[in-house]
Image 1 (cartoon, rainbow, N blue to C red):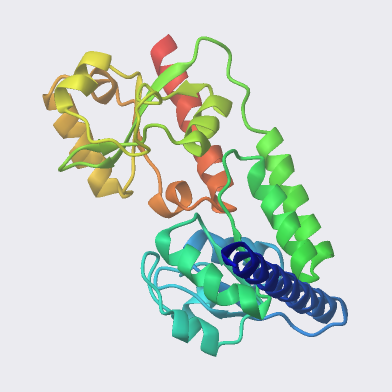
Image 2: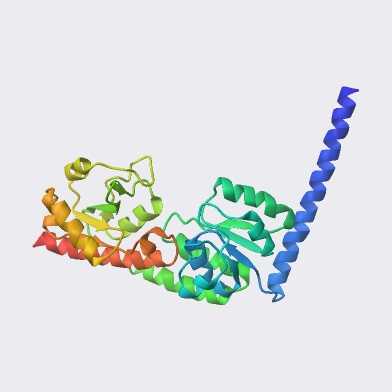
Length: 295
């Protein structure tokens, strides 16, 4: 009796599962068909980099909801907000009737949202590049999903050309310390995207082997490693001058030799199209630093 009851229950679950899968398949097909037949998609982005990637793919005007810090391009500031990059309102998102949700990386919040979206046939995709080459690939993928293939392809091709044109630095690589917070002192560690960027510019991150993406470090450890170049983020001429003087007083050779630079944090920390802007700027900084060292 127990076996028969269990088998019947299992069969019912299997039938329900197959029915649910069929429904989801029909919903997904309907979504794809709507895009193909010219019905504008309704996009919600859960991170600033996702917003920038959707705009690059030519579908920025189809974003119906985003997070607080999505402020680029400037038109994005007018998009209704559904939360910040960490917490967001599932009900607010569902009320917007999205056809696609684009996040950055999986979190407890996005996984819960996926469960709410799945019965509606609404995909949640992640834009989490691990290398510079992934950025134009993401733009192309979004263009395919959103029916903007031509615009996305053009934008992706431009990004690819700029990435290929990054300066191929001669060996040996320069050690580069990236300061992302001064007090307490934080840097970038095991961050494959940033470390890929540095490698293309002839740089190497002395903290790349850290277990964390953004470890807290001591001033003493930085002085002991004695990086040849320092890059500051946050950005600004006043910040740059103050931190250059501070590190010079503490004996950092790179600061005394003026091999310390600043980069806009929105360029560096948002893994979207403007990371290529950051790469071009950092490559230029490392070229200048190498020239200073040779003299």
